[in-house]
Image (cartoon, rainbow, N blue to C red):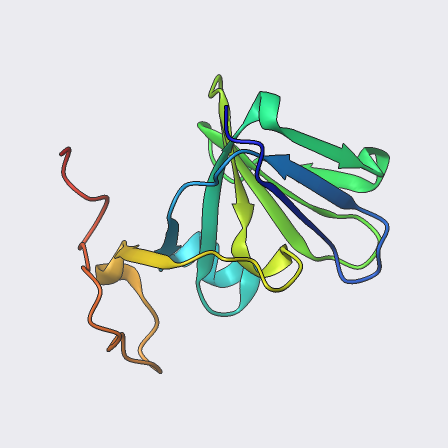
Length: 135
């Protein structure tokens, strides 16, 4: 079992989290919901639910952005922190919320057809119009 530990939290410190094991790759989502919540795009890494511990969980507010998932943010400072699909055994954690150095790396971009018009994606990573096709 990989005992790698990563820590992070919100801007005000009311919410802190600790993950064990290796997080998944960082995926940048450019859909309109993610863009509206963060002001740009949503860069997250997936973590198994049994591999994350959240301190200050009472400060996490959950917003149902769709009938399939909820977005978690700090109710005090507003920091976007989590995204979780209903019934999933994993949670997406905002890559920027991890303490540095994080050791995380961007892997690909999704929902690029829905990205804002004021920036370009030119990092050379794979870009998908919607969600990437199954491997």
